[in-house]
Length: 374
Ligand SMILES: *Cc1c(COP(=O)(O)O)cnc(C)c1O
Image (cartoon, rainbow, N blue to C red; front, side, top):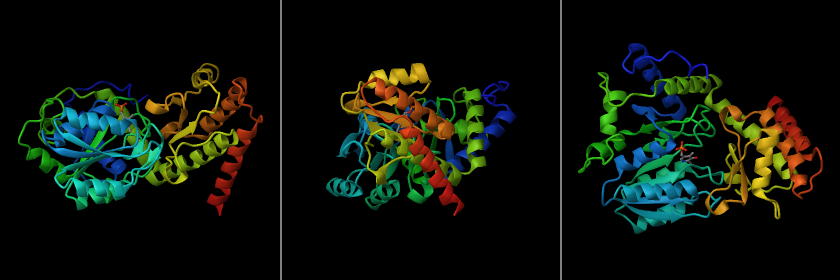
């Protein structure tokens, strides 16, 4: 917040331009990439998604989209609005995308040019194997678009190791910044694909070849006025991420997830996603039979200042989503949420033993502490 409140300077001011360069370097670290074209787009994660599609999809292109939740559905919309044809690999909500299904689909559609998937499905808390999916795409000559909005800064995002081509994220999830910016990174192959287009990108604002004159060139020219103060905020958020170190950040997310999980299970709540594909930063559990979803969420927020996410799409009213993202991924939040649930659930007819969830979380932390000390 202090970074956001710094003096406003011009978008061409040498001090500002220096900060832009630092931002690119810090983002390369966060994404684990050497990609030259790595920068934050002026817009939320959805702008990152749309930028990848409008630049990489040309009218008539076949694009394989993997869908296992809400955000994969949005990718299909993006392909169609870009004039492409979406071939959909359907996966059950709450499951990781099966690389074999992608392989089979690509064999059936040898003319596909792109593969798109969501690494961390925020609607369910399922994580797909990005390395495996990118490898299958590559074997079939396809470039990849990967959504890492919920994974970046929470769970390993290894752009170069995966060989992903166009990757986007958001500032407000595990990066703990204010909303409104979308970090993106593009491989050399992705840039080549954009430069070889037969048609102009239909969005003027998102056309990468134009944005590059501002973010990419050494001799910068005006494209749009950068949201300076938001960028100060992202710079600080990324600086904090680098200070903690990615490995430590990932371990912190796993540690607090383990405690939250122990507490939620002690309350009789069951996870939507099987353990192997479960994201630590997005914990979706089923609303118990007979319990009113909205009453619980409203009471948690109004009386305990704990906000949890509702179910989306077909999961509306059926699941609760507990985010443990970035700065919010801390012991006091885990304990506050569990203590509040212990009070609220009995009021709506779901009897629980007082103290059970908090005690289970304490035991999980203690076990974690012993493991770390060993
Ligand atoms: C939040 C989210 C988005 C969209 O980001 P906005 O900043 O809300 O536009 C896209 N994909 C996933 C997986 C998300 O969780």
